[in-house]
Image 1 (cartoon, rainbow, N blue to C red):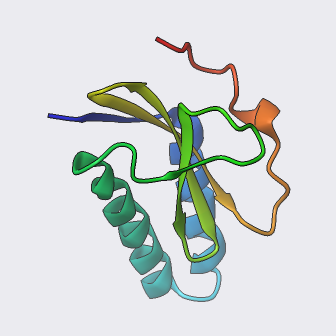
Image 2 (image 1 turned 120 degrees about the vertical axis):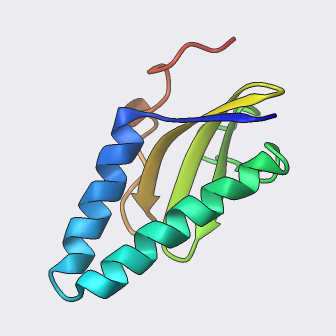
Length: 105
């Protein structure tokens, strides 16, 4: 069984996304949050499903693309991943925001 840990940073990112969308529509904010979690659930099937994050090019840092969002995660082991951040694709990705914040096993 795969263990998926969502970091405080990623939870904050998801909350911020929901808050932003909710300014226009609470319904669509809820839908987007559900879509994010549903996409994360794909990792239960295959933790290597995402592509390597091109800005850092480290095989253990991968991402799932969901519309305009990048769900960035770290493969900790064959059975564990950490969701590090959820980024809007229009924002410049800064590796310092997530690289080195969790230990590589």
